[in-house]
Image (cartoon, rainbow, N blue to C red; front, side, top):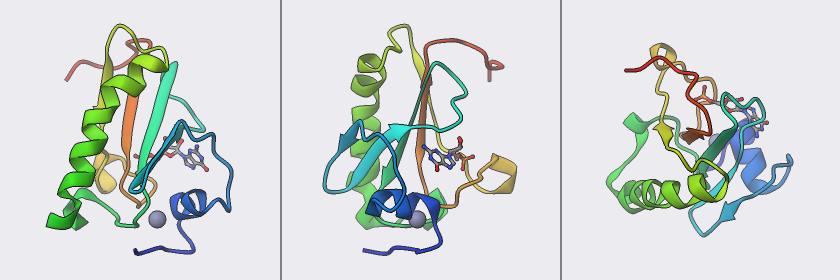
Length: 115
Ligand code: 5GP
Ligand code: ZN
């Protein structure tokens, strides 16, 4: 499995940096965003390092599907009972800051501009 020792999310996956793990399985972990943009703001982070959706491969199909399928339950359990957003930022124009693919789950309020 690919790791990048300079990547902040790889370091969280390895336990070198702290995060409150809300979920963990063989393929990914989930923890709260350190700067929440909504009352519920979770990050779903694969254990394997790959930067963006464009770097995902066929072998990641199940991982990506499993993350999306788990998002509703975690959102609800964390208090987003009236809906939530599921967001993957990609590249500079996508507003990506951490180049280790991750899924944002945002809910508990509606502060955003409607798409
Ligand atoms: P991006 O803009 O790359 O889609 O999102 C990166 C997210 O990671 C940001 O919302 C930021 O607040 C969050 N983040 C950055 N560093 C850390 C960290 O060390 N711990 C946690 N929990 N979240 C982080
Ligand atoms: Zn990484």
